[in-house]
Image 1 (cartoon, helix red, strand yellow):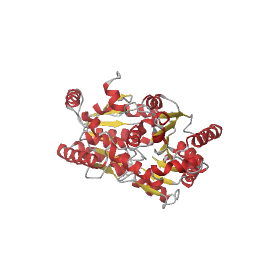
Image 2 (cartoon, one colour; image 1 turned 90 degrees about the vertical axis):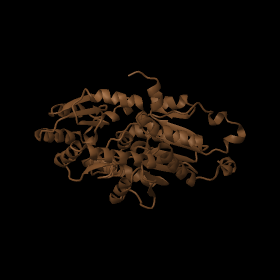
Image 3 (cartoon, one colour; image 1 turned 60 degrees about the vertical axis):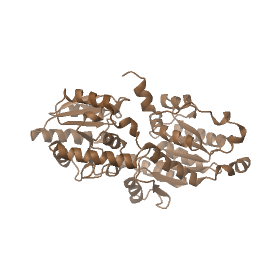
Image 4 (cartoon, helix red, strand yellow; image 1 turned 180 degrees about the vertical axis):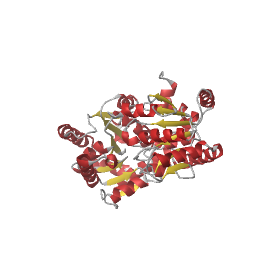
Length: 417
């Protein structure tokens, strides 16, 4: 796919702005300063709307992550960026180096707030914040990988999550079920935790995902080439995404005489990805598999149903994206998904584990176009009302502002460092 208008719309990067160093001296000290920290460059995409809203509310924004094209895009748009190599897996030596680099960066920038999301960045960022004077650290919990981990790995993840939560001044969860899960596992002090509004890490770009005339025409022509019902899965190809459940569900449906098309849009994210794809291909449905594409908004209007068979989520923004195209979702009763889908109102949730219950939900929606339309319409209305990017990101910025002095108090405070 060529880059250009679609990719620019996807990135939604703000215009070139002056860095803090380029501002007049009387304005530099009057701006709050924040460091946004994530582990992987891919996660930087989640920060684009936050950067825009923070800038519009008068903050100086710094972003740190592993180096890559998304971090470079922010730098080119006028934000101050800091490449710091980090790995998602446990690597004591590399993690120690990353911790030192983040700590030195905080001492250099003297930010008001460091907001760290994703597990590794959350741990390193909150630890660095704990030893840096006058910095408020926020751990943004986007999901819990430990939910699907076992054995020693689960114990290590449990310990690091507890340490990150203990080191942070504030812990924000992107869904209420995630907040409940942290409390049930006794990972975080409930007095320190909160979910802002109805949740979500960044909301969704309503203008991008509401289909325009071109998207509708593309969807109609594509649908004519496919066998209905048309199901879709959009996301990582990995075991915790529950694609084995989806494959078994398709086999159950085929045995009942229900066949159609499954579109799988996503990139491999596990050594088991090839086996997962092969299992999907062995179902008695037509399965079309493609890598993730920036213009994914053109896929949603093609679908009748979005499948979200995940074993865990933080919230499930893909559900919000599909909703804006009027597409209902079918999910499992797991953390994050139960917040994104309102069962019986904006989609269906399989409350029993396993493929049989999931297949029954798909079959119910596939057989009832009126039900799909009703749920899809309600889903779109809910997203427009509660989950626009500006509304969600503004809630986060207001929380950061509640942790810091007013900008007019900054000059004297910063001079004491």
